[in-house]
Length: 422
Ligand code: HEM
Image 1 (cartoon, rainbow, N blue to C red):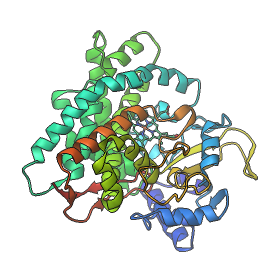
Image 2 (image 1 turned 90 degrees about the vertical axis):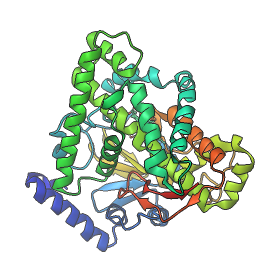
Image 3 (image 1 turned 60 degrees about the horizontal axis):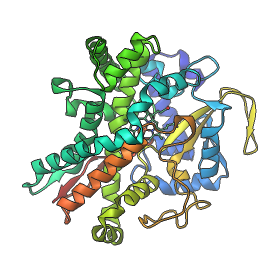
Image 4 (image 1 turned 90 degrees about the horizontal axis):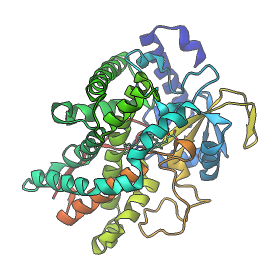
């Protein structure tokens, strides 16, 4: 929305929301999604978008892709990237909140060579061998969380289990401890940044984001200083040493830590919540799993395909190019609807069926693909598998105790509250 860029912040946010609402009313399908009209179940509207052909042009000014093959192609295509020719990153009016610090300006939003250099520094902490070492700790944590709620009539699956588990895991991996780990505060930051993926909704939200960014920047800056001479194996110590060797700069490190912290739990909490919800909604599948808990890795893969926590990602064209018969000028954004790609009938048999016995089908795109393929995928898979297995082992009769409350975000799909009975 280039015409809006010269207006003041509050005016601009209100104008953007008004544009989204107006376009939603006049039938622009993705504006309807952003306006929250399909929060409970976005998949039927994705099918309508799919019917428009390989590229759906939203009147918001970008194309959307629903095809698994085309999404997979774009995320691997070097002619698309994260930055515009002016070096700015994508997103809706990012300057609105970046004033609070360098958050989300991290390696997840850079192109080579910076992306390659920064990813190499953090990658060792997420290798499958490392993730196998974390498993015992994650199991212990899952049991401890359930011990706390075991005697209760009901508890909140998200606040009492699905959120604190990945928060504790990523905090441990980074080397945060004691009073630096404020689970509730981190959870609220996670929800805040999750909503941000849809764009800023109000000046109040922009202020909250600035304050959260500042708080996290200060936290990581202090820890970096404290760990510079440490020989610890936690990620903050490793990154501080890399900075001392000149491989990365301090702002790069701080934003990498912030993104790892937030990406590390805001997504995994939703994998656990969405997975449990899918099992509740499909009693026949739940019965299959109850008889064979060794199926849990497949449950996790199917939950990721069926209802992925990250519903979309964006790329920007770096060249004059053609995609699916449409010409793209440089700096043109394209949005991949991963949630739709995961239900592409060209790739998955009966794509709208939750089926934990699927085999032989291509990998879903819940973790995207190409050079930005989720760095935490192995960790997330392990957390999801352990969490769901321990939960169902300990509470085989677990059931809903009331309606679940959804997060108000189109890009980050998950539950905010979910009362359950053991
Ligand atoms: C179920 C859980 C998760 C899901 C669904 C998920 C999803 C994704 C997706 C879709 C992307 C790629 C975005 C793009 O292509 O533009 C991504 C990237 C990323 N994820 Fe995850 N993620 C999960 C868990 C995690 C965890 C546990 C961590 C860290 C501890 C993590 C850290 C990251 C980082 C740092 C990137 C950026 C990688 C890069 O740009 O090279 N994620 N994730």
